[in-house]
Length: 470
Image (cartoon, rainbow, N blue to C red; front, side, top):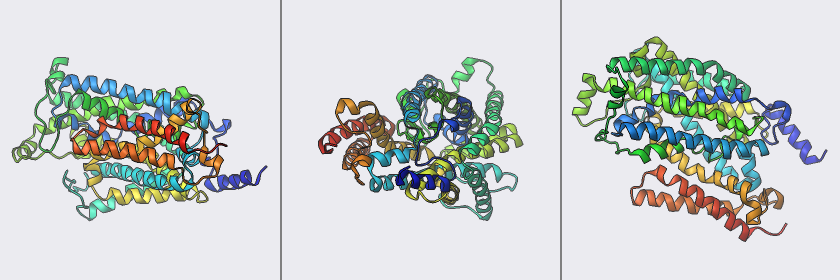
């Protein structure tokens, strides 16, 4: 055994057996069932209570919503199946260790730090969502869409307690995260179904035509929102998890899969969560919009507030509170787990437990500030746009290295700590299309795919130019 392998074995033992810096061995691989519950739970989540109402506030039509979601989520599933899981089962490495081999340690440290912090902010939004449910029995004042700071001591205490519990579950590793998702996901899915049925009754829907007419031909967006068309729905739903699939973050999850076909299990998350649950949440919001309180806000030129806990509680009572809390947990758990892996790539000799506790602590602090949840749609779109092009580096190297005549894992083999080909490719693609989005007011999700493709192509071109003969 080489000294290098011996050192990695020691790191692996310290890290707690999560195989952060070596391929997952055959004995630790998991069947598709482990991923089914995790994805169903993670994507039928607290965020859906925030995202669902979007499709009412943007004035989208019934056709654009229902067909746009159907096809956009299909593209997301195909991205997971034929890109993420395909590469994951061949390499069986975390995203962070794979990037280190390609980019070099110095360059990947910046990416890992940014990625980990962004994951923490996303998990913090989930803690916020759960807190809106826990706060109901305490008659807690709910955060408004415009709130940024904590609105009182009750809010702070509830967020801290929820964050501590979620962090401890995530710190136990992938097995515990997967088991927690499998236990909770059936309850959450049942809650969304119940919420949808109750909301349909409250809206007086007696036929498919009545259901269709909730959106109908669409209308004017609510104050502060933009008008959504079919293409807005299609691209937003495709890239809502762009960082996970075309951005390759879920290499860290699917490295445990026995077969690449486990990637199909993401359909449970997309069509139970990002289809049924979004529509069910939109129905809950449709009920609320008809109330005198909501109408008064609209009369003042304001969009009615979205507080997931009260929305679910008004439909199915205490069960709604429980469902929103669990839904927040099942999203925050794997998100904090991923953030911990990102931090561990920077501090490889620190145990999985402690880096995950660090990630959970940052997420809990973020959860104290409602703005992360209230601005979730904008944050998710920007997050995917920033990180997705980095995934193109892995994808294009994996599938096209022979055609391009470049060396795989060049930084590792050449002993380079900073691969400028990666930085140039990402910087140019991100900068160009972000400028186009801002300068010409182009919907950010419209330029995510062009930025991803350009980054991959530029990486191959720059690698061909700058790589030295091995």
